[in-house]
Length: 66
Image (cartoon, rainbow, N blue to C red; front, side, top):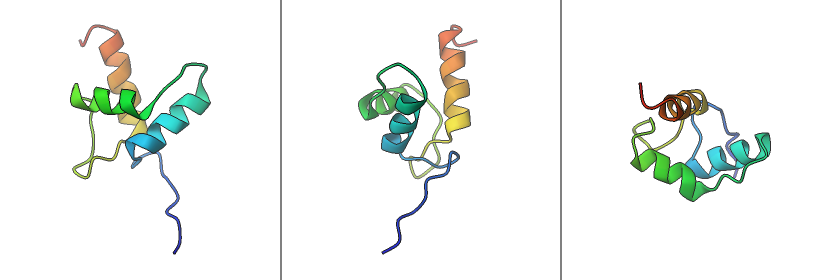
């Protein structure tokens, strides 16, 4: 069975957490990504995350939600 190559526009929360953790010096877990999703972070209908949209949402949240 072929393994699906992840794309930044459709990542599972686990994949998003791994990429974000590898890209920075902060600990990012799947639970943290899922908590953000519960708090309103954008996802596709299937629950996958567009990393660009998610990053924009994080910046918006850090700026006070404006």
